[in-house]
Image 1 (spheres, rainbow, N blue to C red):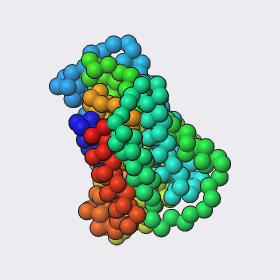
Image 2: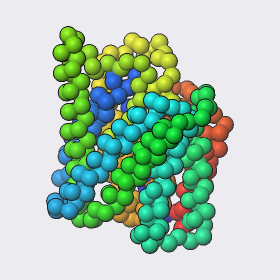
Image 3: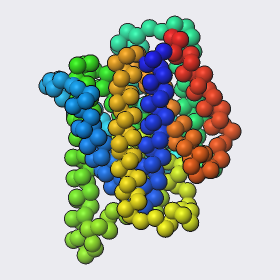
Image 4: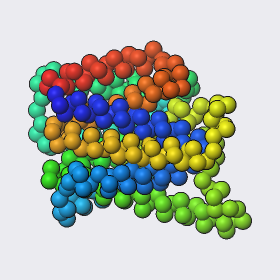
Length: 320
């Protein structure tokens, strides 16, 4: 029960981070939001390390770096597939695959067994993932094979992040998360630096690459995304915001995302990978609820159904 509750809590916190990242991506380029949030998350984890503890061992360090690499792959594939579209299909597909991949790993390879209600709960959770991740107003068109392949790849990479984190030892504490986030920081900062150098060579200011161009996609260091709110037109209040405001949003996004990672890691170490992966994939729920409260956005009927099923799935899996 504790593991399922933590996983559901982690999903809501992930969704909150995505909401903040999505708002930041309205003014900053998405890769910049990712780099800043990765860096602030790393600082938060480093500050928490002396209090949370963790033993440094070669295997756990390697697992952490590998998890970070999968996070970077997820981000790259997610950007690519959502640029192709349609988001209304590819976004839920990515979330479902990110749940199924570690779910199958846990059940088939780790030998996890659940009570009958648990298996039903997994099915309900997958349906909830699809409904919660639905993007109202998106025109439904047939996705290309390339887009579907990239969405599946992004989902597998996100799932692999969970699988790899599940391999770490309890004694390692948050050390694997520190190494994972360090990998994300290095890669994203290199990408931003390359963009700045390219801008200078074209006769533009280096800072010009920071600002968003067109609709941004707010993606967190672990490959999740807030798709709906970055695609909406800017409102009057937001257009008056400064780059500094967006930077603070990105920084906060990283700290919240690091907290979500920590909750997820505790859930993994106290329960089954299959259950944690199914409930963690419900991260859009946090984004939807925050948007409804903060931005007064209407929650679609299908999303309310998904949120209800998410709570039902959480209860069923807690009994598994």
